Figure 1 (cartoon, rainbow, N blue to C red):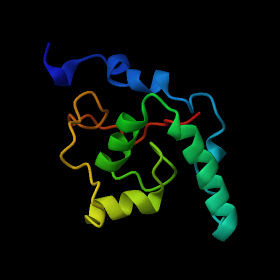
Figure 2 (cartoon, helix red, strand yellow):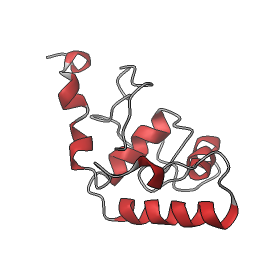
Figure 3 (spheres, rainbow, N blue to C red):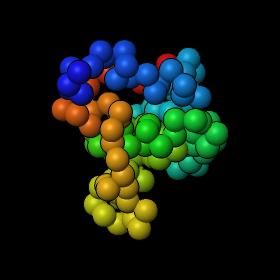
Figure 4 (tube, rainbow, N blue to C red):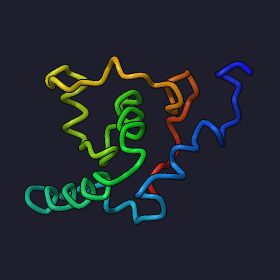
Amino acid sequence: MNNHLRPLLTHWQWQAEAACRGMDSAVFYSPPDERGEDRRRREASAQAVCAACPVRSPCERFAVSNREAHGVWGGTTERDRLEQVRGNRSDWRAEAPTSGVPGSNGVDISHATTHG
């Protein structure tokens, strides 16, 4: 079967294993007025969930490859991902394989919800 034609459920299967599955998305996304220490605390809480997640790497690759501009994904914050995209980090995973990661094969997933 052509990789571009595989069933959508298979395409998103990695999310079924996510530690954040079923959690309140407010853990991962900032309210518009959140700043400073409050934001750092919430991000640290989200990153703690991600630290033990079995799909942390595919989640991060998904967020980076799709230029996800909001929330904590795969343990990375918006700022972390922006720095990766700009090439400011030595651990940039641009060369990491994206096989099996939603969005890596041209499927439009821009309206998908991951957390929650």
